[in-house]
Image 1: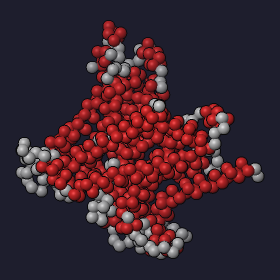
Image 2: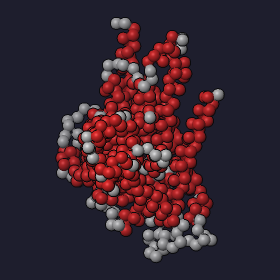
Image 3: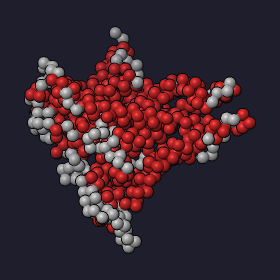
Image 4: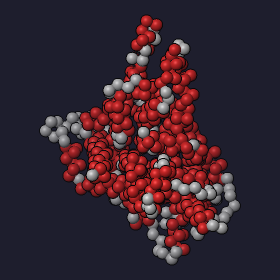
Length: 305
Length: 274
């Protein structure tokens, strides 16, 4: 295709065809995402179960939404949905506060700053399942974990946090992993704040708090938005930590939507039902992004007033 | 000593304390990997102990860790290269041959990255099964290349927009072909940007677990799958050996991330600063 473009007589049109160089990537992504997406929708209207050979049948026009009905009627689903939302919102909140604090700590020259930054980004580089085994077996284990020793030393009763507060434990561990991500983005934002703007505000008599509220925060807005948006997208999909630490339990106290889909698909082999759950996961992800952008837009408008 | 200097030192001490606390779980993992199994579960915990390399010998070099690491390395490197090979020309088109559809295509590409893996795992499993891709390196390579493709196109387009088009036109006047434009003009200028892009793709792929655990069983399983099932394969005392396996699994990415901190920040903030 491109060889004809560089023949001498057509040289003037060089490049016209080159805009199609994006075609392979686009076709690749269409094949990889849109076909599975379409199939998820189709499967969600079937009663296909891999444990029942020959069950891959369309449910029929009248009862095509049966998988969805079953899910909506299942009280467990609402629990799972709540878990997913609570987990995501809590992690976003905790990592935003901590990430901002850490970024402010690093945004000032001091001896050992590079070391501090290196240590602080490390949890983000950890493989999530490795973090999970470390927290579960080395730190939080009720018999020989470090937390047992800490609480004993402080004279507190030793509790198995994962059992006593399972969802909070998962939130804490996921937050530990994602705080550096928020911190790095906010730190880049802080460092792009022009020095003369800060100086000017100081000369106008702004204290540290006023400076933060009226100069730093508005400047950070784009960075905050990007960090939180990406984080929401990623944390909605948390899976490895739950798989390793709680297996979704006790009961379904730590089951989120991805884990529920995993159970439905790969332990009950219920392809139809799992696909319907998958549609809920896709809808939830889109809703979260749309809602987030709505909030951002409203905040902008209020600012502009 | 001046008050200002004292303040800076206090700031340094406080920040380093916070940083050390955040890092502590990782340090504890590394320390435990050098303990005997009995020391590893001692109560109260042993802060000082005679280090042993037994766990590394048994669990890492003598066990299957190296084999799984081979899978991870192969899958990670191949999928990142494939994503770059597909993404580089796409970025070229997006950066230099803008049409009124370019912004839309870019946005659509990014939106595919938002698709929850759990939302498409069922059909992917069925497709993999029907194409005999289950538990193969090829299957995961194709999948992870697609997972990282939007990121690659987004980032490389951004870096290319910083390269003046005049440079490319000059090369064309000298009779450069498209391939020569890529390799002689753009590649040398884009090395730092491509490094930042590849680093992020490598981290995401190396650490990926959801697709890996559901689409492989043993032959093509990456390290993440092995680490998650480590306990089941061991006897009563496994904590020290598990720490060794976990440490070996995370060390390559930790070191790469430490060395390339600047690139990491560049990659993560592309979206925010553009």
